Image (tube, rainbow, N blue to C red; front, top):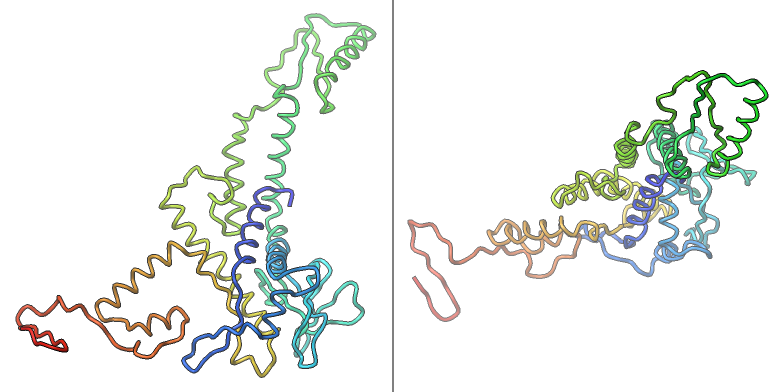
Length: 363
């Protein structure tokens, strides 16, 4: 986490996902979800262990996923019915998944026995073998090293007050004793204004040196740093404007980038978390009826406004019924909501329109 862009990406992703509302739902006859606030899994998600609330737990879980490519939470306790009552986060560096013939087991460094998959919540990042995720930090180690080197360059440059290395030229050649005396005097004076350990260079016989230090302009420091920021952000699929690069940002570009951030970055993680928690925390008898739903609509305010506009237009021309719209929003139908409506001020222009009310007929 020494790289600021990685820190920003991990914080943004983990907090965006960790702070979303999480609900336990059951599938009704209509196929839509009904919230179950009193379910044991609901209580577990609000307080997974004595030292974490639900938001802190999920933020830490996603942060572990983004740093190490894997996030582990072990089921420490279960009640008499078989529901998990405590979830503890594990350091991914201390856990190793082992594929067995019929199950995946987990070796934990401080435990003598292997942990079966039913007692281990395992969120995986990019996992070519489907068993263990790959760390994005390790996969892009060279890129991160370049970022660190660029930061060190900037730190060293500003630490020396933008001064370059000193070169002292002499027209003649000094005797050895005089040369050592001059060198000691200059070195002592130079150390007072420079703390980087460099020594002044003494050239004899009129030897000239053009430059001793590359400038930030010559090194293309700012463009290089921005390029590194963009590349790291791309590895995490986070828009550049969210990590400090506004060079190409406009309102329309950022709005579209935020939508892509949800579809390309957050949504795959949300689906993985929902699926893994649902499989590991519900009883076998509940697998077909219960599920975990993370409400992401708060992240899509602009997209929701556009979606509501589409719903309204489709409703006004008789394409959708109210219940069809509610079904698309995972809401329960209501009685009388299956009727289609059309505006009465539109009609085919070669026919007379008859409007019927409770009292009169108009033609």
